[in-house]
Length: 82
Image (cartoon, rainbow, N blue to C red; front, top):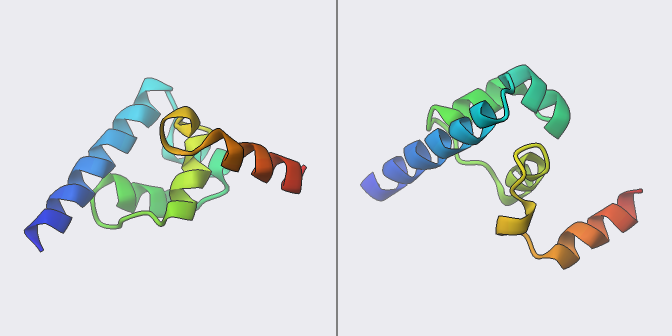
């Protein structure tokens, strides 16, 4: 259980740092990712772990695509949706 608590805290801190490096507010990130800013705040505080899909939605505004998702997934999503 301790491992999960530490993971949530560290992931949240890392995501907050990425957001702040881009000078974004929680509201701006929420609008860009089409997510509730209160939920993003809970993730940043280590209260919630984002689903893989939520992480995917955060990936564009926080410039995470090249690090976490295969390019084929991003390209296919763009093709399907746009």
